[in-house]
Image (cartoon, rainbow over all chains, first blue to last red; front, side, top):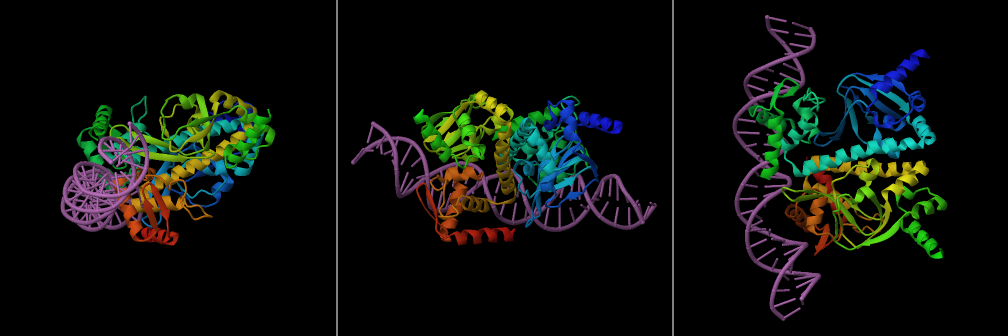
Amino acid sequence: MKNKDTDYQRYRKSLSNCHLLENMDDLTFNSLISLFKEQTWPKNTCLVDENRFLCKFYIIISGRVKMYQLDETSSKEVTLFLLHKGDFMDLFCLLDGLEHKVYYESLDEVKVLEVPMENLHDWFQKHPEYYKNLLFYAGKKLRRMENYISDIIFANISTRLVKLLLRNVNKDSKNLELINDLSHKEIAYLIGSTRAVVNRQIQKLKKNGSIHTSRENLQIIDLGILIEFLKKENNHE
Amino acid sequence: MKNKDTDYQRYRKSLSNCHLLENMDDLTFNSLISLFKEQTWPKNTCLVDENRFLCKFYIIISGRVKMYQLDETSSKEVTLFLLHKGDFMDLFCLLDGLEHKVYYESLDEVKVLEVPMENLHDWFQKHPEYYKNLLFYAGKKLRRMENYISDIIFANISTRLVKLLLRNVNKDSKNLELINDLSHKEIAYLIGSTRAVVNRQIQKLKKNGSIHTSRENLQIIDLGILIEFLKKENNHE
DNA sequence: GATTATGTGCTACTTAGGTAGTTTTCAGTA
DNA sequence: TACTGAAAACTACCTAAGTAGCACATAATC
């Protein structure tokens, strides 16, 4: 019992940014969290089990999971979301209960909370006011996707790359986070391009002194140059 | 009174496909619908008033509204959604209450139901179980966007064009609906391309005998050829 | 019925970005 | 310490699709 309580406190803390749990009193929080079981997934594992996400729902506690689409014929990939702490899987299934053809892969060792979809639905039935939190989260994802679309249509690869970098700079530390240890291939998939093309742009950024790279590592040296670069790109076209 | 009742019945009927109103008993339906006021917008009007959608919410009863993004520097457009009967504006604002920089334009004379956002929120507070309907709708839009993204990344223009056509063929009548009277420019914006390029692809489809066009009119002559065309495109790449 | 605006069809040109291939670097490990 | 495999860097090439421009058709307005 005591043990469980400390677990709950731990979850409360590590999921402080989780939209679903926002404005939730401790009692309600515990009633929800008691439905979950902690689980650990090893690094670089694909979660391909088709129907898994129809019957189980997951909240990420730590580690990154990329959610991506795969084109069978060309074997190209696009990363739709880079999910992390506080994110859900699978939002789509939760919302409409339909199958969702999408792939998941862990980029780190990932800790999740697992709950049978049914139990979660039952819980929501009893606490329908928390649907609102879910709506807020869905709204955020919708906005992200809308942005993705307009970026792909309007912006060229270098713009998209710089935008990606700027989006992942920690406001306080000014350091690149979340994507700083990805390979060029993974970065390419995040902006809907290919390894070779992204590499070409990265060389440009290295030459203008805004970034520094080593194997699976990308650091921002001069944020100002990046921002300037973005401005120029916007005006040219 | 009598008059209002017949109005409600009319709305009930014309909004039969509206996710928000699904599984709603007549009493609840009336309590919701009584908050709304009917409004008519003329054809080809832009709804640019920035904050309008923060304070008012709309359900489309009839006519089409395109929701689109505009790139100021290149003045290019992408149509994100072609909204019609049963669709909402602005879903994003409703979900998270934040500003949403997006454009709306009526393609027909459009009839909508208008409600002050505040009143709608109050109503939901009293009927939180109907958040679920909203979630379902949001899920559908998320799926549409995810599809949009993977199409743009994976598929070439001709594939995207044919997919667009097939998506808008009425299952029963086999006729093209909703987009059959659009200009090539508008069709281009629906698949993230430009007029000239779309025109090029349309000429191809005309030559292979699958479609017939006249000014602002596109009809499908042979669905089979279109489906075959799509298959070929998929295998080549 | 003259004028204007908008949609359509086509040609010619340009280019960003995808593709393919080779070499080099680097981390893990046998 | 050498071997292995992946990531990164770079070169050369190709093409889909964007761009610009013009002629013509159709519809709308006065």
